[in-house]
Length: 555
Image 1 (cartoon, rainbow, N blue to C red):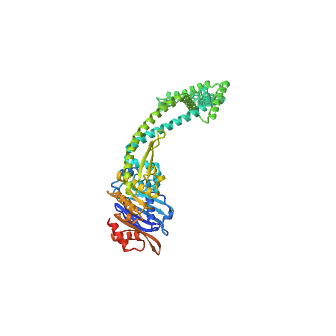
Image 2: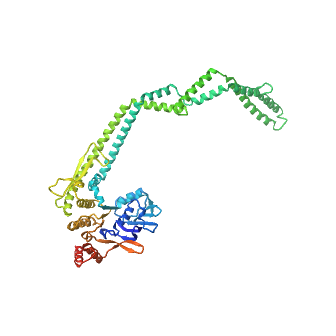
Image 3: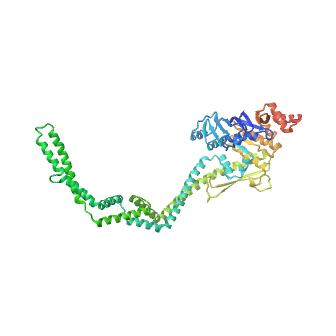
């Protein structure tokens, strides 16, 4: 429930701080007094995009803030949890700020939020019903939503939604499989040529690196042999070789070990070096014997490398491992082509099962709507006569299209209407006048409010084109909607509606040296008499108008 609305520097409003009460409230005022401005400010709180021209001229910041009592709103805590917001059921504060520099900020309980989050929350808190919203009567989703609210079929809709998503996902997968299979079959010959080319190359991971090493070794065989010869001679020459001389030094030190302290340790150290160098000399000698330049072998190695380099260039990769990956992928694609018909058949069988499950869930959902439709028809035919349409007929037409499921089910819903017994039922948006559509919408909203706790409802001059007894009936229905702790606010020009409000607010303009300013005030009992009398008689309030106003209020 909307408890308080604060507006500062918004178009013609300098500052407004107004408390609202539960029940049925009315807002009146002359045309142009600023009622639409207040609705515009509320629209900002509901996430509507901001127009910086709305900032009051001469100021640099506009603020709109509202306090809500959400203590009786079911499921609202989950919204706050999902959006990491602190919940305060007794006093939830929504604020919107605009600056002349073009910035727009939104807050929920002082936590910054995006416009999307603000709009989602706003849709849960306030339902602004204007003449424009009457166009919803021509919308399939709105008509279906009315049936679902009355049916209270959230669990059935959730079950259907899950089945439908599974079916649609399988349908998309099947379409993708078919497309990929057709594309692969068109390129099958080329894919097989590529695979056979790579398979014939007998690729081995790591082969390229080994061949490159062998090629480099054979290409520089003479240089390598010369270096190995020089190393071998330095190490192993009979008299001048390092190994022989180191052995001599070791023996010499060993011979004086008993005569010189430390000689034994030096001998042992040189002996270790001797063993290591002797082993290295033998390895050098062995490598020297292994180096043998064979031109035919070098040619074969380079030919193989050229083949690998050509394949890597052709397939735009850098390693043999990547070529092997391409070969294996091609093999898999060719296998998929060979097994394609069987895989498609299996996917089609899966899709048929999911389609059947979706239809079954849809049938359950349809049944809840058929029962709901009977309730809607009965209640509408009770309410419409109260609104001045004694011969009106209202029917909910449900057509089931098994071949065209949607996210909301298989049902195509149409609200059929006629105001006369002699006329055939037709879609309400095609045959009802503007005034009739407004009354049909009011009856629907009244019916919904009896089935579920609607948020604060604001009716914005839906009484246009209505007067007299019908206006009184509309007021009674809105008052009924505002009972039981609910909150309904009607912006109206009709005294019959204004008189039935439990709370009455007036919007008016004031000319000041700083310009025109709009105000809003809560009227006392005497002020209500004067306001309604003025609505009855115009600017010249007569005694008869005052008596008439008192009579309206007394009823």
